Length: 423
Image 1 (cartoon, helix red, strand yellow):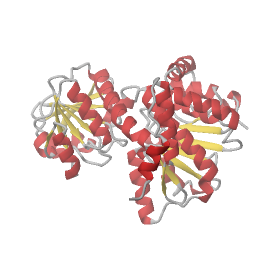
Image 2: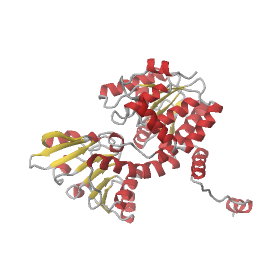
Image 3: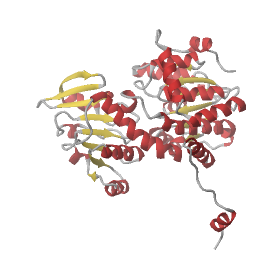
């Protein structure tokens, strides 16, 4: 049975006195622009695919995520939510969710210790299925929270970093339950990672700095789908874009897309704005910082705050201070100032509102339907990383097209026979 608002408030751990009304306003705003989730919610209200189940979620806790949790609740679940990054949680949205009967353990700016405890408290519900973003829930369920996984059928992983961590577990033979790879669904990475990251990263940077992109040299570290999206948007806004890569094939693609490509050591003295989107650590480190221009902006759009080495930045600085919200200045011995945005965390969420609602409508529709698939079929799946079933991808695409007032051709019988002919 779903939890009511009073019970959710009793079980939740969120700051007191937060204005839930503004959180409801944010959620209601994005609902107006998420037609796919609206259709799925209407279906779930009838079919109740999660009846009698507990769902744990760890994703960036803001308005679009909040709506996803209410869609899951409409499917009959008890939903327990926390964030996947201490700086992306919006407290008013968390408070609004509690009033919707969602149990929430999260608050903006939590320390690492409190953030981890929020994850543990969320898993204490003994979930049947879960949604993870970055792999923290999965990691805990294989360690100190193993006992909380006694009812777990499986889950879904939202982002590139989490998928990397999952494949490492599979390779080592250490994955104890099936996880669906939502990140690599076509209706996720082609749109969310590319168009969503491209726009929202620049939104977060411009919102924090109030500086122009046109005329700047923007260094994009990583040319995966997220890097492609950012490079495309920065170029469109008038920037000179340099791409750094470790994959020669992606590097060639960046060249043919019209970008300069070079190692970070060569790009470091040239850039005005650096953005990391690799999922790896130490992408920007001491030897790069030592040759950067005065006034450079350093931002990260990867999941964890390890891509820009903050320890190196601290060690090199003779003065560190908050220049304005979400910007910390590091003065070097020679007087240069390097500016770190959003403490090196996801700049689009820590210093902005994240991806546009229309983009997350597609990603979270994939999540909702994949979680339904896991709830129904997970007990028969191998303990492996499972691709999103193609029919889910295509269904989400069809609903999206219909919401845009457009459609696609349908093959005739003769065309189908021709395409299937063995010759």
